[in-house]
Image 1 (cartoon, rainbow, N blue to C red):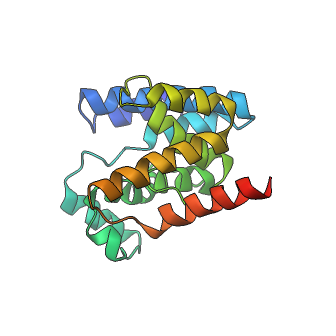
Image 2 (cartoon, rainbow, N blue to C red):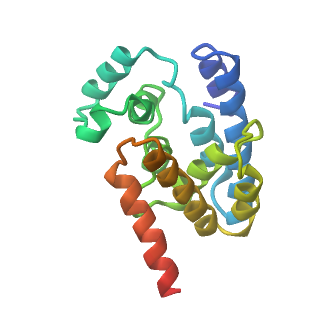
Length: 189
């Protein structure tokens, strides 16, 4: 399928804001892929599809997750905001996506994880830096995204962990492992 085909699919599944966000993430992912030597088509596809199930009702997301043979852990069960990335990674199989890197980029775009591929990092960062984003620190995040994926990942993880902690929300172990890997690799280099 082409990028236009994927755009048409997501257009039918989401409202204006989410559609615009997905198009912006795809554009940002494409730009970051060019900058960091990643496959631009794969980055675009993962970016355009990263939120494909975000506006599907929660019960349907859970059904998709179950159909994919995924069992949610305790944190995931109590964090419905994480479900769309998991259900999305299963849903894209229905579209003929078999590339494990694209599937993982969709699955881990909300939490990150240890051992992320370059494409996974690009989608994680593009979600933070898409054109419509306007949170405090977004310009710093955009600058860091042009300096190195690791600097941007560290800044994003610090932001996320601080926000979750401040709001007294559970932190998924994947987020902690991602953060620890970044910090430990930084001290080695």
